[in-house]
Image 1 (cartoon, rainbow, N blue to C red):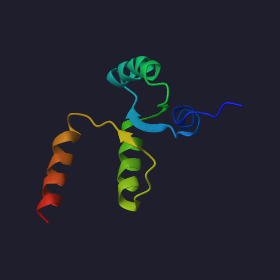
Image 2 (image 1 turned 180 degrees about the vertical axis):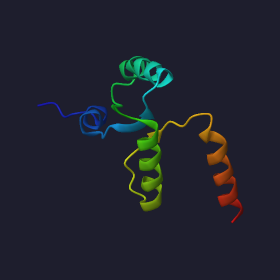
Image 3 (image 1 turned 120 degrees about the vertical axis):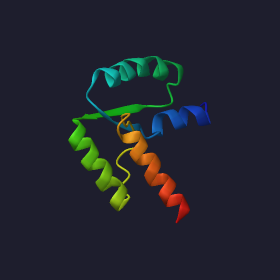
Length: 94
């Protein structure tokens, strides 16, 4: 009986990487491109959670407030990027 390699064990037991994103054309392109990524990295499973912008923003804020960790990755738009950059800069000075 052959033993399983560490790689095989990780592939079967790995939690998916949960990605929170909005439903728009750019994010649809990113989802389509992720198919190629998962072909190259079959040990990494992606779980897309596509939400409308207001719902995603609300869930992000509640997730951060209570350290819920419902998303591993979240996409933000060009409008939000300066806001998060300012918040991070302010936090690093405290």
